[in-house]
Length: 561
Image (cartoon, rainbow, N blue to C red; front, top):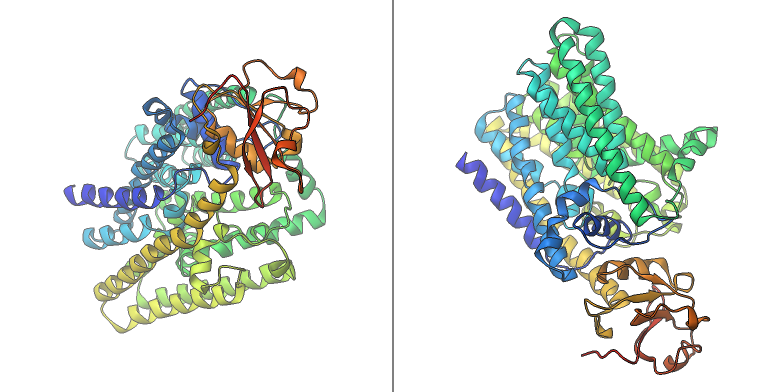
Protein backbone atom coordinates (compact mmCIF):
# COMPACT_ATOMS: atom_id res chain seq x y z
CA UNK A 1 0.00 0.00 0.00
CA UNK A 2 2.80 2.42 0.84
CA UNK A 3 4.44 1.73 -2.51
CA UNK A 4 1.17 2.44 -4.30
CA UNK A 5 0.65 5.67 -2.36
CA UNK A 6 4.22 6.76 -3.11
CA UNK A 7 3.62 6.04 -6.78
CA UNK A 8 0.36 8.01 -6.74
CA UNK A 9 2.17 10.94 -5.11
CA UNK A 10 4.94 10.81 -7.73
CA UNK A 11 2.38 10.78 -10.53
CA UNK A 12 0.57 13.74 -8.96
CA UNK A 13 3.83 15.70 -8.61
CA UNK A 14 4.69 15.13 -12.28
CA UNK A 15 1.26 16.46 -13.27
CA UNK A 16 1.47 19.47 -10.94
CA UNK A 17 4.91 20.44 -12.22
CA UNK A 18 3.76 20.23 -15.84
CA UNK A 19 0.36 21.82 -15.28
CA UNK A 20 1.62 24.87 -13.43
CA UNK A 21 3.96 25.94 -16.23
CA UNK A 22 1.14 28.18 -17.45
CA UNK A 23 -1.47 30.01 -15.42
CA UNK A 24 -4.22 30.76 -17.95
CA UNK A 25 -6.62 28.76 -20.10
CA UNK A 26 -5.02 27.88 -23.44
CA UNK A 27 -7.55 25.64 -25.18
CA UNK A 28 -10.28 28.18 -25.90
CA UNK A 29 -13.28 28.03 -25.68
CA UNK A 30 -13.27 24.62 -23.94
CA UNK A 31 -11.32 25.60 -20.85
CA UNK A 32 -13.16 28.90 -20.42
CA UNK A 33 -16.48 27.06 -20.66
CA UNK A 34 -15.63 24.63 -17.87
CA UNK A 35 -14.03 27.30 -15.68
CA UNK A 36 -17.04 29.62 -16.01
CA UNK A 37 -19.34 26.72 -15.14
CA UNK A 38 -17.21 26.09 -12.05
CA UNK A 39 -17.44 29.77 -11.10
CA UNK A 40 -21.21 29.59 -11.34
CA UNK A 41 -21.37 26.38 -9.29
CA UNK A 42 -19.12 27.90 -6.62
CA UNK A 43 -21.65 30.69 -6.10
CA UNK A 44 -20.16 33.22 -8.52
CA UNK A 45 -21.73 35.20 -11.33
CA UNK A 46 -23.06 33.60 -14.53
CA UNK A 47 -21.61 34.34 -17.95
CA UNK A 48 -22.85 34.48 -21.52
CA UNK A 49 -21.37 32.01 -23.99
CA UNK A 50 -24.51 31.76 -26.08
CA UNK A 51 -24.21 29.79 -29.34
CA UNK A 52 -20.88 28.32 -28.31
CA UNK A 53 -20.48 24.59 -27.67
CA UNK A 54 -22.18 23.61 -24.41
CA UNK A 55 -19.68 22.67 -21.68
CA UNK A 56 -21.46 20.62 -19.06
CA UNK A 57 -21.42 21.11 -15.32
CA UNK A 58 -20.16 17.80 -13.90
CA UNK A 59 -16.47 18.63 -14.21
CA UNK A 60 -17.23 22.12 -12.86
CA UNK A 61 -18.39 20.50 -9.61
CA UNK A 62 -14.95 18.94 -9.16
CA UNK A 63 -13.01 22.16 -9.71
CA UNK A 64 -15.47 24.62 -8.10
CA UNK A 65 -13.56 24.55 -4.75
CA UNK A 66 -10.73 26.44 -6.50
CA UNK A 67 -12.98 29.53 -6.46
CA UNK A 68 -13.43 29.21 -2.69
CA UNK A 69 -9.65 29.33 -2.21
CA UNK A 70 -8.91 32.46 -4.23
CA UNK A 71 -10.45 35.15 -6.41
CA UNK A 72 -7.31 35.64 -8.51
CA UNK A 73 -7.74 33.96 -11.94
CA UNK A 74 -4.15 32.72 -12.08
CA UNK A 75 -4.29 31.22 -8.59
CA UNK A 76 -7.64 29.60 -9.37
CA UNK A 77 -6.22 28.03 -12.51
CA UNK A 78 -3.22 26.62 -10.66
CA UNK A 79 -5.49 25.14 -7.99
CA UNK A 80 -7.50 23.50 -10.78
CA UNK A 81 -4.26 21.96 -12.08
CA UNK A 82 -3.61 20.52 -8.60
CA UNK A 83 -7.14 19.05 -8.51
CA UNK A 84 -6.55 17.54 -11.94
CA UNK A 85 -3.25 16.07 -10.76
CA UNK A 86 -4.69 14.53 -7.60
CA UNK A 87 -7.51 12.85 -9.51
CA UNK A 88 -5.52 12.02 -12.63
CA UNK A 89 -2.79 10.29 -10.62
CA UNK A 90 -5.46 7.85 -9.48
CA UNK A 91 -5.01 6.22 -12.89
CA UNK A 92 -1.97 4.49 -11.39
CA UNK A 93 -4.00 2.81 -8.65
CA UNK A 94 -6.77 1.69 -11.00
CA UNK A 95 -4.30 0.46 -13.62
CA UNK A 96 -2.57 -1.61 -10.95
CA UNK A 97 -5.91 -3.20 -10.03
CA UNK A 98 -6.62 -3.86 -13.71
CA UNK A 99 -3.28 -5.64 -14.21
CA UNK A 100 -3.88 -7.72 -11.12
CA UNK A 101 -7.26 -8.72 -12.60
CA UNK A 102 -5.29 -9.90 -15.64
CA UNK A 103 -3.22 -12.09 -13.25
CA UNK A 104 -0.04 -10.06 -13.73
CA UNK A 105 2.29 -10.41 -10.74
CA UNK A 106 2.44 -7.55 -8.25
CA UNK A 107 5.84 -6.22 -9.24
CA UNK A 108 5.08 -6.29 -12.95
CA UNK A 109 1.62 -4.83 -12.37
CA UNK A 110 3.09 -1.90 -10.45
CA UNK A 111 5.64 -1.07 -13.13
CA UNK A 112 3.14 -1.43 -15.98
CA UNK A 113 0.65 0.71 -14.03
CA UNK A 114 3.21 3.53 -14.09
CA UNK A 115 3.54 3.09 -17.86
CA UNK A 116 -0.25 3.37 -18.15
CA UNK A 117 -0.57 6.36 -15.80
CA UNK A 118 2.06 8.27 -17.78
CA UNK A 119 0.34 7.65 -21.12
CA UNK A 120 0.88 10.87 -23.12
CA UNK A 121 -2.80 11.74 -23.61
CA UNK A 122 -3.61 11.47 -19.89
CA UNK A 123 -0.60 13.54 -18.83
CA UNK A 124 -1.14 16.13 -21.56
CA UNK A 125 -4.82 16.79 -20.89
CA UNK A 126 -4.20 16.95 -17.13
CA UNK A 127 -2.50 20.30 -17.89
CA UNK A 128 -5.79 21.91 -18.90
CA UNK A 129 -9.16 22.62 -17.32
CA UNK A 130 -10.86 19.88 -19.34
CA UNK A 131 -12.96 16.82 -18.58
CA UNK A 132 -10.24 14.80 -20.33
CA UNK A 133 -8.04 15.38 -17.27
CA UNK A 134 -10.26 13.10 -15.16
CA UNK A 135 -12.38 11.06 -17.60
CA UNK A 136 -9.77 8.28 -18.04
CA UNK A 137 -9.90 7.65 -14.28
CA UNK A 138 -13.71 7.65 -14.25
CA UNK A 139 -13.99 5.32 -17.25
CA UNK A 140 -11.43 2.81 -15.96
CA UNK A 141 -13.07 2.91 -12.53
CA UNK A 142 -16.45 2.23 -14.11
CA UNK A 143 -15.15 -0.81 -16.01
CA UNK A 144 -13.43 -2.25 -12.94
CA UNK A 145 -16.58 -1.81 -10.86
CA UNK A 146 -18.62 -3.53 -13.56
CA UNK A 147 -16.15 -6.40 -13.63
CA UNK A 148 -16.33 -6.78 -9.84
CA UNK A 149 -20.11 -6.92 -9.96
CA UNK A 150 -20.28 -9.32 -12.90
CA UNK A 151 -17.86 -11.79 -11.33
CA UNK A 152 -20.01 -11.92 -8.18
CA UNK A 153 -18.26 -9.62 -5.71
CA UNK A 154 -21.53 -7.97 -4.68
CA UNK A 155 -24.28 -5.63 -5.76
CA UNK A 156 -22.55 -2.63 -4.22
CA UNK A 157 -19.96 -2.66 -7.00
CA UNK A 158 -22.65 -2.54 -9.65
CA UNK A 159 -24.41 0.29 -7.85
CA UNK A 160 -21.14 2.21 -7.69
CA UNK A 161 -20.62 1.58 -11.43
CA UNK A 162 -24.04 3.04 -12.20
CA UNK A 163 -23.35 6.09 -10.04
CA UNK A 164 -19.96 6.56 -11.70
CA UNK A 165 -21.34 6.45 -15.23
CA UNK A 166 -24.18 8.78 -14.27
CA UNK A 167 -21.60 11.31 -13.13
CA UNK A 168 -19.74 10.86 -16.43
CA UNK A 169 -23.04 11.71 -18.15
CA UNK A 170 -23.09 15.04 -16.32
CA UNK A 171 -19.55 15.85 -17.49
CA UNK A 172 -19.48 15.48 -21.27
CA UNK A 173 -21.53 14.29 -24.25
CA UNK A 174 -19.33 11.17 -24.31
CA UNK A 175 -20.84 10.38 -20.93
CA UNK A 176 -24.24 10.00 -22.62
CA UNK A 177 -22.75 7.44 -24.99
CA UNK A 178 -21.18 5.55 -22.08
CA UNK A 179 -24.49 5.67 -20.21
CA UNK A 180 -26.27 4.14 -23.22
CA UNK A 181 -23.62 1.40 -23.40
CA UNK A 182 -24.10 0.81 -19.65
CA UNK A 183 -27.87 0.46 -20.06
CA UNK A 184 -27.41 -1.93 -22.99
CA UNK A 185 -25.10 -4.06 -20.84
CA UNK A 186 -27.70 -4.17 -18.06
CA UNK A 187 -30.34 -5.27 -20.58
CA UNK A 188 -28.02 -8.03 -21.86
CA UNK A 189 -27.30 -9.22 -18.33
CA UNK A 190 -31.02 -9.27 -17.56
CA UNK A 191 -31.65 -11.43 -20.62
CA UNK A 192 -28.77 -13.87 -20.18
CA UNK A 193 -28.08 -13.94 -16.42
CA UNK A 194 -31.49 -13.35 -14.88
CA UNK A 195 -30.97 -15.95 -12.16
CA UNK A 196 -27.67 -14.61 -10.86
CA UNK A 197 -27.98 -10.87 -11.49
CA UNK A 198 -31.64 -10.25 -12.31
CA UNK A 199 -32.52 -8.47 -9.08
CA UNK A 200 -29.32 -6.44 -9.16
CA UNK A 201 -30.08 -5.08 -12.62
CA UNK A 202 -33.14 -3.18 -11.45
CA UNK A 203 -31.21 -1.58 -8.60
CA UNK A 204 -28.40 -0.60 -10.95
CA UNK A 205 -30.86 0.80 -13.48
CA UNK A 206 -32.59 2.85 -10.77
CA UNK A 207 -29.28 4.36 -9.58
CA UNK A 208 -28.26 5.17 -13.16
CA UNK A 209 -31.66 6.80 -13.82
CA UNK A 210 -31.57 8.88 -10.63
CA UNK A 211 -27.97 9.95 -11.22
CA UNK A 212 -28.66 10.80 -14.87
CA UNK A 213 -31.73 12.78 -13.84
CA UNK A 214 -29.65 14.79 -11.37
CA UNK A 215 -27.01 15.40 -14.06
CA UNK A 216 -29.69 16.46 -16.54
CA UNK A 217 -31.11 18.95 -14.03
CA UNK A 218 -27.64 20.31 -13.23
CA UNK A 219 -26.78 20.78 -16.89
CA UNK A 220 -30.14 22.36 -17.62
CA UNK A 221 -29.50 24.98 -14.96
CA UNK A 222 -25.93 25.63 -16.17
CA UNK A 223 -27.22 25.96 -19.74
CA UNK A 224 -29.83 28.52 -18.71
CA UNK A 225 -27.30 30.57 -16.77
CA UNK A 226 -24.36 30.58 -19.20
CA UNK A 227 -26.04 29.99 -22.57
CA UNK A 228 -29.25 32.04 -22.23
CA UNK A 229 -29.80 32.38 -25.99
CA UNK A 230 -28.97 28.78 -26.88
CA UNK A 231 -26.01 26.50 -27.64
CA UNK A 232 -24.25 25.35 -30.81
CA UNK A 233 -26.52 22.75 -32.48
CA UNK A 234 -24.04 19.88 -32.75
CA UNK A 235 -26.93 17.41 -32.85
CA UNK A 236 -27.89 18.77 -36.26
CA UNK A 237 -24.49 17.76 -37.62
CA UNK A 238 -25.04 14.26 -36.25
CA UNK A 239 -28.42 13.77 -37.96
CA UNK A 240 -27.25 15.40 -41.21
CA UNK A 241 -24.16 13.20 -41.46
CA UNK A 242 -25.96 9.97 -40.70
CA UNK A 243 -28.75 10.66 -43.20
CA UNK A 244 -26.55 10.66 -46.33
CA UNK A 245 -24.04 8.26 -47.83
CA UNK A 246 -21.36 10.95 -47.98
CA UNK A 247 -21.97 11.76 -44.33
CA UNK A 248 -21.73 8.10 -43.33
CA UNK A 249 -18.49 7.75 -45.31
CA UNK A 250 -17.11 10.85 -43.56
CA UNK A 251 -18.12 9.44 -40.17
CA UNK A 252 -16.49 6.05 -40.78
CA UNK A 253 -13.28 7.61 -42.12
CA UNK A 254 -12.93 10.10 -39.25
CA UNK A 255 -13.71 7.33 -36.74
CA UNK A 256 -10.88 5.34 -38.26
CA UNK A 257 -8.67 8.39 -37.88
CA UNK A 258 -9.47 8.52 -34.17
CA UNK A 259 -8.55 4.85 -33.76
CA UNK A 260 -5.36 5.40 -35.79
CA UNK A 261 -4.37 8.24 -33.48
CA UNK A 262 -4.89 6.11 -30.37
CA UNK A 263 -2.83 3.24 -31.77
CA UNK A 264 0.08 5.32 -33.04
CA UNK A 265 0.20 7.52 -29.92
CA UNK A 266 0.78 4.36 -27.83
CA UNK A 267 3.45 2.90 -30.17
CA UNK A 268 0.98 0.32 -31.46
CA UNK A 269 0.18 -1.17 -28.05
CA UNK A 270 -3.41 0.11 -28.07
CA UNK A 271 -3.87 -1.80 -31.33
CA UNK A 272 -2.76 -5.00 -29.61
CA UNK A 273 -5.17 -4.23 -26.78
CA UNK A 274 -8.05 -3.59 -29.18
CA UNK A 275 -7.54 -6.97 -30.83
CA UNK A 276 -7.11 -8.70 -27.47
CA UNK A 277 -10.44 -7.31 -26.26
CA UNK A 278 -12.09 -8.50 -29.47
CA UNK A 279 -10.62 -11.98 -28.97
CA UNK A 280 -11.85 -12.16 -25.36
CA UNK A 281 -15.32 -10.99 -26.38
CA UNK A 282 -15.64 -13.63 -29.11
CA UNK A 283 -14.02 -16.52 -27.24
CA UNK A 284 -16.72 -18.67 -25.68
CA UNK A 285 -14.32 -20.15 -23.16
CA UNK A 286 -13.54 -16.79 -21.53
CA UNK A 287 -15.12 -16.01 -18.14
CA UNK A 288 -18.47 -14.29 -18.53
CA UNK A 289 -17.37 -11.17 -16.63
CA UNK A 290 -14.29 -10.82 -18.85
CA UNK A 291 -16.31 -11.20 -22.04
CA UNK A 292 -18.95 -8.69 -20.97
CA UNK A 293 -16.48 -6.02 -19.86
CA UNK A 294 -14.31 -6.51 -22.96
CA UNK A 295 -17.39 -6.20 -25.16
CA UNK A 296 -18.52 -3.13 -23.23
CA UNK A 297 -15.14 -1.50 -23.82
CA UNK A 298 -15.25 -2.23 -27.54
CA UNK A 299 -18.80 -0.89 -27.79
CA UNK A 300 -17.74 2.29 -25.98
CA UNK A 301 -14.77 2.76 -28.33
CA UNK A 302 -16.90 2.23 -31.43
CA UNK A 303 -19.82 4.43 -30.41
CA UNK A 304 -17.72 7.29 -29.08
CA UNK A 305 -15.65 7.31 -32.28
CA UNK A 306 -18.74 7.17 -34.51
CA UNK A 307 -20.88 9.69 -32.61
CA UNK A 308 -18.16 12.29 -32.13
CA UNK A 309 -17.05 11.97 -35.76
CA UNK A 310 -20.60 12.46 -37.00
CA UNK A 311 -21.21 15.45 -34.71
CA UNK A 312 -17.85 17.11 -35.39
CA UNK A 313 -18.18 20.26 -37.53
CA UNK A 314 -15.88 20.43 -40.54
CA UNK A 315 -13.58 23.29 -39.49
CA UNK A 316 -10.88 22.95 -42.12
CA UNK A 317 -8.35 21.51 -39.68
CA UNK A 318 -6.18 18.39 -39.78
CA UNK A 319 -7.70 17.47 -36.40
CA UNK A 320 -10.96 16.83 -38.26
CA UNK A 321 -9.24 13.90 -39.94
CA UNK A 322 -7.43 12.08 -37.10
CA UNK A 323 -8.22 13.43 -33.64
CA UNK A 324 -7.26 11.53 -30.52
CA UNK A 325 -8.93 13.50 -27.73
CA UNK A 326 -12.38 11.91 -27.82
CA UNK A 327 -11.04 8.37 -27.39
CA UNK A 328 -8.41 9.47 -24.85
CA UNK A 329 -10.72 8.40 -22.02
CA UNK A 330 -10.49 4.78 -23.27
CA UNK A 331 -6.93 4.71 -24.59
CA UNK A 332 -5.46 3.72 -21.18
CA UNK A 333 -7.80 0.71 -21.13
CA UNK A 334 -6.57 -0.37 -24.56
CA UNK A 335 -2.98 0.15 -23.43
CA UNK A 336 -3.58 -2.02 -20.35
CA UNK A 337 -4.97 -4.79 -22.54
CA UNK A 338 -2.01 -4.51 -24.92
CA UNK A 339 0.56 -4.61 -22.15
CA UNK A 340 -1.38 -7.49 -20.62
CA UNK A 341 -0.78 -9.50 -23.80
CA UNK A 342 2.97 -8.91 -23.57
CA UNK A 343 2.98 -9.75 -19.85
CA UNK A 344 0.83 -12.90 -19.94
CA UNK A 345 0.34 -14.39 -23.39
CA UNK A 346 2.51 -17.14 -24.87
CA UNK A 347 5.16 -15.83 -27.23
CA UNK A 348 3.48 -17.30 -30.29
CA UNK A 349 0.16 -15.72 -29.35
CA UNK A 350 1.79 -12.38 -28.57
CA UNK A 351 3.65 -12.45 -31.91
CA UNK A 352 0.41 -13.06 -33.81
CA UNK A 353 -1.27 -10.25 -31.88
CA UNK A 354 1.55 -7.86 -32.77
CA UNK A 355 1.40 -8.82 -36.45
CA UNK A 356 -2.37 -8.32 -36.47
CA UNK A 357 -1.97 -4.94 -34.77
CA UNK A 358 0.58 -3.90 -37.40
CA UNK A 359 -1.88 -4.89 -40.13
CA UNK A 360 -4.68 -2.98 -38.40
CA UNK A 361 -2.48 0.12 -38.14
CA UNK A 362 -1.52 -0.01 -41.80
CA UNK A 363 -5.15 -0.44 -42.88
CA UNK A 364 -6.22 2.50 -40.71
CA UNK A 365 -3.39 4.60 -42.17
CA UNK A 366 -4.53 3.82 -45.70
CA UNK A 367 -8.14 4.79 -44.92
CA UNK A 368 -7.09 8.08 -43.33
CA UNK A 369 -4.81 8.84 -46.27
CA UNK A 370 -7.52 8.13 -48.86
CA UNK A 371 -10.08 10.21 -47.00
CA UNK A 372 -7.78 13.12 -46.24
CA UNK A 373 -6.04 13.57 -49.57
CA UNK A 374 -4.53 17.04 -49.91
CA UNK A 375 -6.18 18.21 -46.69
CA UNK A 376 -3.35 16.69 -44.67
CA UNK A 377 -1.08 19.42 -45.97
CA UNK A 378 -3.61 22.08 -46.97
CA UNK A 379 -5.77 22.34 -43.84
CA UNK A 380 -4.79 24.14 -40.65
CA UNK A 381 -2.51 22.08 -38.43
CA UNK A 382 -2.37 22.71 -34.70
CA UNK A 383 0.47 20.94 -32.95
CA UNK A 384 -1.52 21.19 -29.71
CA UNK A 385 -3.87 18.57 -31.23
CA UNK A 386 -1.04 16.09 -31.94
CA UNK A 387 1.74 16.52 -29.34
CA UNK A 388 2.70 12.85 -29.06
CA UNK A 389 2.51 12.33 -32.84
CA UNK A 390 4.67 15.41 -33.41
CA UNK A 391 7.21 14.00 -30.96
CA UNK A 392 7.28 10.65 -32.78
CA UNK A 393 8.04 12.28 -36.12
CA UNK A 394 9.75 15.42 -34.74
CA UNK A 395 7.63 17.43 -37.14
CA UNK A 396 5.78 20.28 -35.38
CA UNK A 397 4.42 21.90 -38.53
CA UNK A 398 2.32 19.16 -40.14
CA UNK A 399 0.97 15.66 -39.62
CA UNK A 400 3.43 13.16 -41.09
CA UNK A 401 0.98 10.30 -41.36
CA UNK A 402 3.34 7.78 -42.92
CA UNK A 403 6.31 8.60 -40.69
CA UNK A 404 4.15 8.39 -37.55
CA UNK A 405 2.80 5.00 -38.62
CA UNK A 406 6.30 3.76 -39.42
CA UNK A 407 7.57 4.90 -36.02
CA UNK A 408 4.73 3.13 -34.20
CA UNK A 409 5.09 -0.08 -36.20
CA UNK A 410 8.85 -0.07 -35.68
CA UNK A 411 8.47 0.49 -31.94
CA UNK A 412 5.97 -2.36 -31.62
CA UNK A 413 8.18 -4.68 -33.69
CA UNK A 414 11.22 -3.92 -31.55
CA UNK A 415 9.18 -4.54 -28.40
CA UNK A 416 8.14 -7.95 -29.72
CA UNK A 417 11.74 -8.82 -30.66
CA UNK A 418 12.87 -7.92 -27.15
CA UNK A 419 10.17 -10.15 -25.66
CA UNK A 420 11.22 -12.97 -28.00
CA UNK A 421 14.97 -12.80 -27.44
CA UNK A 422 15.16 -12.42 -23.66
CA UNK A 423 13.32 -13.68 -20.60
CA UNK A 424 9.83 -12.25 -20.11
CA UNK A 425 10.73 -10.41 -16.90
CA UNK A 426 13.77 -8.79 -18.48
CA UNK A 427 11.87 -7.94 -21.64
CA UNK A 428 9.02 -6.31 -19.75
CA UNK A 429 11.49 -4.30 -17.68
CA UNK A 430 13.25 -3.04 -20.81
CA UNK A 431 9.96 -2.15 -22.54
CA UNK A 432 8.54 -0.47 -19.43
CA UNK A 433 11.71 1.57 -18.91
CA UNK A 434 11.72 2.65 -22.57
CA UNK A 435 8.04 3.62 -22.39
CA UNK A 436 8.45 5.65 -19.19
CA UNK A 437 11.50 7.49 -20.55
CA UNK A 438 9.62 8.25 -23.78
CA UNK A 439 6.49 9.37 -21.91
CA UNK A 440 8.42 11.75 -19.67
CA UNK A 441 10.32 13.07 -22.69
CA UNK A 442 7.06 13.66 -24.57
CA UNK A 443 5.64 15.50 -21.55
CA UNK A 444 8.66 17.75 -21.17
CA UNK A 445 9.07 18.50 -24.86
CA UNK A 446 5.35 19.21 -25.22
CA UNK A 447 5.57 21.88 -22.52
CA UNK A 448 8.59 23.46 -24.23
CA UNK A 449 7.23 23.20 -27.78
CA UNK A 450 3.47 23.56 -27.33
CA UNK A 451 1.97 24.77 -24.06
CA UNK A 452 4.61 27.32 -23.02
CA UNK A 453 4.83 29.13 -26.41
CA UNK A 454 1.08 29.04 -26.91
CA UNK A 455 0.59 30.35 -23.38
CA UNK A 456 2.84 33.33 -24.09
CA UNK A 457 1.07 34.09 -27.37
CA UNK A 458 -2.44 33.86 -25.90
CA UNK A 459 -1.53 35.84 -22.79
CA UNK A 460 -0.12 38.65 -24.90
CA UNK A 461 -3.16 38.62 -27.18
CA UNK A 462 -5.89 38.63 -24.52
CA UNK A 463 -4.46 39.83 -21.19
CA UNK A 464 -6.46 42.58 -19.48
CA UNK A 465 -4.02 42.93 -16.58
CA UNK A 466 -2.16 45.89 -18.17
CA UNK A 467 -5.50 47.70 -18.20
CA UNK A 468 -5.43 47.69 -14.41
CA UNK A 469 -8.22 45.13 -14.11
CA UNK A 470 -9.58 45.05 -10.56
CA UNK A 471 -12.08 42.76 -8.81
CA UNK A 472 -14.70 45.53 -8.78
CA UNK A 473 -14.50 46.29 -12.51
CA UNK A 474 -17.51 45.74 -14.72
CA UNK A 475 -16.26 45.17 -18.29
CA UNK A 476 -18.19 45.98 -21.44
CA UNK A 477 -17.36 44.17 -24.69
CA UNK A 478 -18.37 44.80 -28.27
CA UNK A 479 -19.06 41.17 -29.21
CA UNK A 480 -19.83 41.82 -32.86
CA UNK A 481 -16.51 43.53 -33.58
CA UNK A 482 -14.12 41.27 -31.65
CA UNK A 483 -12.83 37.79 -32.40
CA UNK A 484 -14.65 35.28 -30.19
CA UNK A 485 -11.35 33.86 -28.88
CA UNK A 486 -10.56 37.24 -27.38
CA UNK A 487 -13.73 37.84 -25.42
CA UNK A 488 -14.12 34.20 -24.39
CA UNK A 489 -10.61 34.35 -22.90
CA UNK A 490 -11.36 37.63 -21.16
CA UNK A 491 -14.64 36.28 -19.79
CA UNK A 492 -12.57 34.10 -17.46
CA UNK A 493 -10.20 36.91 -16.47
CA UNK A 494 -13.07 39.17 -15.41
CA UNK A 495 -14.73 38.07 -12.15
CA UNK A 496 -18.12 39.42 -13.24
CA UNK A 497 -20.30 38.82 -16.27
CA UNK A 498 -19.20 40.65 -19.42
CA UNK A 499 -21.64 43.37 -20.51
CA UNK A 500 -22.52 43.56 -24.22
CA UNK A 501 -22.18 47.12 -25.56
CA UNK A 502 -22.62 49.02 -28.82
CA UNK A 503 -19.77 51.53 -29.23
CA UNK A 504 -21.91 53.63 -31.59
CA UNK A 505 -24.43 54.21 -28.82
CA UNK A 506 -22.53 55.18 -25.67
CA UNK A 507 -25.76 56.49 -24.17
CA UNK A 508 -26.82 52.86 -23.74
CA UNK A 509 -23.72 52.10 -21.65
CA UNK A 510 -24.72 50.84 -18.16
CA UNK A 511 -23.51 53.21 -15.42
CA UNK A 512 -21.57 50.51 -13.56
CA UNK A 513 -19.33 49.66 -16.55
CA UNK A 514 -15.81 50.89 -15.79
CA UNK A 515 -13.81 49.29 -18.61
CA UNK A 516 -14.75 48.82 -22.27
CA UNK A 517 -13.02 46.65 -24.91
CA UNK A 518 -13.52 47.69 -28.55
CA UNK A 519 -11.87 46.74 -31.86
CA UNK A 520 -8.84 48.71 -33.06
CA UNK A 521 -9.13 49.31 -36.81
CA UNK A 522 -5.90 49.06 -38.78
CA UNK A 523 -4.18 52.38 -39.41
CA UNK A 524 -6.21 54.14 -36.71
CA UNK A 525 -4.67 56.07 -33.83
CA UNK A 526 -5.47 54.49 -30.49
CA UNK A 527 -7.33 57.62 -29.38
CA UNK A 528 -9.64 57.30 -32.39
CA UNK A 529 -10.46 53.62 -31.82
CA UNK A 530 -13.74 54.62 -30.17
CA UNK A 531 -14.96 57.76 -31.92
CA UNK A 532 -18.18 57.94 -29.91
CA UNK A 533 -16.49 57.48 -26.52
CA UNK A 534 -18.22 59.45 -23.74
CA UNK A 535 -16.44 62.53 -22.46
CA UNK A 536 -13.55 61.77 -20.16
CA UNK A 537 -13.03 58.12 -21.13
CA UNK A 538 -9.47 57.38 -22.22
CA UNK A 539 -7.70 54.45 -23.94
CA UNK A 540 -5.60 52.74 -21.32
CA UNK A 541 -4.09 49.95 -23.44
CA UNK A 542 -3.97 48.91 -27.08
CA UNK A 543 -3.08 45.46 -28.38
CA UNK A 544 -2.34 44.43 -31.94
CA UNK A 545 -1.98 40.68 -32.48
CA UNK A 546 -3.03 37.92 -34.88
CA UNK A 547 -6.09 37.02 -32.79
CA UNK A 548 -7.52 40.51 -33.26
CA UNK A 549 -6.59 44.12 -32.52
CA UNK A 550 -8.34 45.76 -29.59
CA UNK A 551 -8.25 48.71 -27.20
CA UNK A 552 -9.40 48.92 -23.58
CA UNK A 553 -10.98 52.22 -22.52
CA UNK A 554 -11.47 53.25 -18.88
CA UNK A 555 -14.15 55.42 -17.29
CA UNK A 556 -12.89 58.79 -16.00
CA UNK A 557 -14.01 58.39 -12.40
CA UNK A 558 -11.99 55.19 -11.92
CA UNK A 559 -8.29 55.01 -11.31
CA UNK A 560 -5.82 52.30 -12.02
CA UNK A 561 -2.39 51.41 -10.75
